[in-house]
Image (cartoon, rainbow, N blue to C red):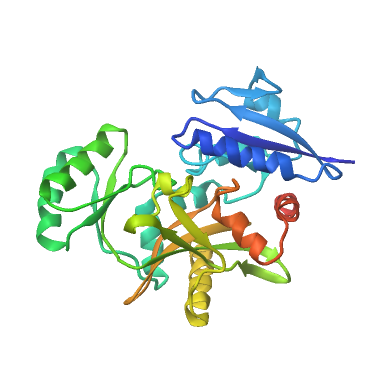
Length: 320
């Protein structure tokens, strides 16, 4: 008998279009001999559809044995969809609701990284738009310029900018609040090589198997922005051109963050390899699965076919 797998994609986040691609990749690569895939589309208003017809979560979820989440950003990675699945008792792959919330909240994730002994860029947190001017003044006095300005709860580098000087920093902060950010982080700009390392539970005989780090090489000195992630604006080398020691340190740090955030099944953490050491940036609980995404490249580098990985995720979800 086939296992009925619901594939959730779309969603009311800024990453709707990327989610559609991740979901399509899952649907295309789920082995048909073992799984009956149900394509569940969620539009930008939050309306659910199955087979092109409007439906409700309770009507759809009661038909499924397990769910693979192809959602990204708000609603998908912040714990909201996970809480819904937990309420209906549906098994799913990926972090639970609390782990998802922790990882998506960049400030809390940084605190966990520091507690675990990892380096992470120094920062200031702007909780309210009315604090923007005061914090911008403080940043100019205490941080080398430029700095990184980012929303606390968005993914895929959406809203991230690297700016220097009082007026540009203030403008970047105010713009994020205007666009709906609940709070803003300003970080010191760590110069170095960008790396991303995935981990998968119970793979190849290891409780937590670390994939080879991907090195992200951007053009013209740009950072790994949203446009660079999903265009030809960057090159991804896997395995990255890191020394054996650096590679092992990146893999260890990715495992540390997976455990520190209380995640499950799989995750991908991002780092900067600098002269002063390896700096933790953030963790993705639902990494992109498009053809341009980093996790599939890491899997291919160690000879793990994408359909085998998806089957493994379903099996992990069914165990718990």
